[in-house]
Length: 279
Image (cartoon, rainbow, N blue to C red; front, side, top):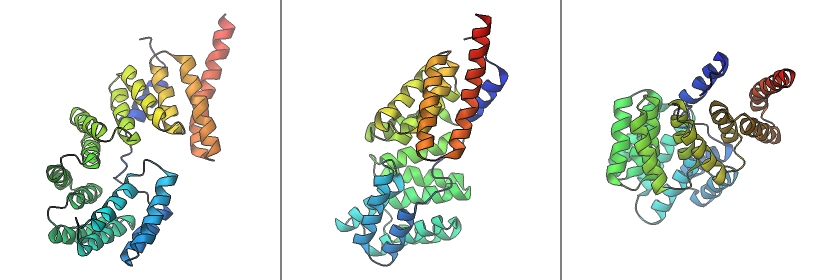
């Protein structure tokens, strides 16, 4: 591979090695917040409507999928009302950035139904937010033990390992999550992050392309694909993907995304001028 300017290498390393983990600081949408509130009022049908709205807006919304899964389990008799209410109260406290109080409610849910896997998965998320990593790992593993085909628990455990720098263990869990849920955009994105961070750019490209085959409106995927192509010396493809990322950022009025993308596009235009001048 040709030597790259130091600034590109530095930015690329930071971009792919410091992943923002989706469950570390949950970002709740208005629909999710309203859904959680409606469950606490016993308005389960109305809550379903809000979680479905959230999913319509973001098809990879794992929180809303999980919430609907809990409601499905309640309807089928797999979980009792008491446990359900504790679970959603815990989620509400996570929404309010109160993980310690959330854990109190989630432990009550665990006591009400100790073999319900979704409780352990959410507990793992809460412990991760709190920084109790040993407890988080135990809870994710317990969720998988109770439900061996629980894709979200594998994903969360993979994300947990990735946050600890244990990429090999993370990849193993992500691959299992992808096997169980082959349409999980977040799983393929994180696999791509790891391959890129470790210099396997060809593999990273394949996984970012996989993301785009499932969600062709993902500006983030186009952006990361542009970076991976750049590090593989495929400059024209790199620029094409940055341009596409910018178009989507503009459609979403994402000013931060536009500014970040422009920084790299400006570099390409500068390089292009130099190449033409030399030619």
